[in-house]
Image (cartoon, rainbow, N blue to C red; front, side, top):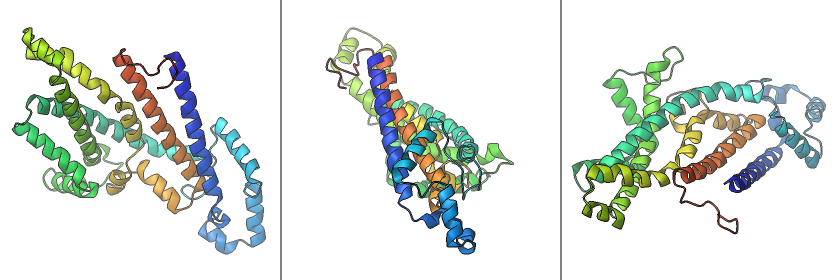
Length: 316
């Protein structure tokens, strides 16, 4: 376990470092005019622009710039924003939005996990009956219909029937968060319901379950002691990744409801050529993705000691 953990952590670190390097190099391939705001491009002379680029180190050899970038990463120094919030530290810009996304995303994921797993359990216990067909129809609908269509449907019902705010507001955080949370949870509910049903149906058809029924074990005991436990093991692998990525914000849902979270920040930074914010956000997303996969593997092994994450040769 310790050997595997160290190996995976090193692999994760290398992966994030490679992603960070690629993003850094891509940002440096853009024309230097993108470093300046529109007003600065119009007002500054070429000599003044050159002086600012020289002061920022953007005219140094690329190897020297990359070495400096690595040193800044070691000190968690991601520079300052030049377009989103001119002169503000990048982590300060991201931190204020991350808090909003984390709150909405955590609530949405908790709702999705509970609702989706319960729906999947009910579907498996009522296989090929009305409830199973309803759950399957919901899953197909959510996966087949573009998110903006389902979001519009939620908005129409929520505003017209229940009188909920259609846009997020810092003055009325509670009520204005309801519709964004529902939209964030829609796809995850379908995902957890689909896979819970699939794993439980697979378990119910296995020989050891048939043997348990022959021995007289009650349906409740079979479901709790065997089916749920074994079906939940592969499902739990995706929970850490879902949690980490959900709290980092949803581009569509947050922009649809004007939520000042992490979701729209990346596209805004790209559109406005805020290079430090762009490369920092990509590093954060890469780190969250890699960490989610790693934690999922470890959690799955902890729940079922029979699972071996590495063989004698050290490969997974």
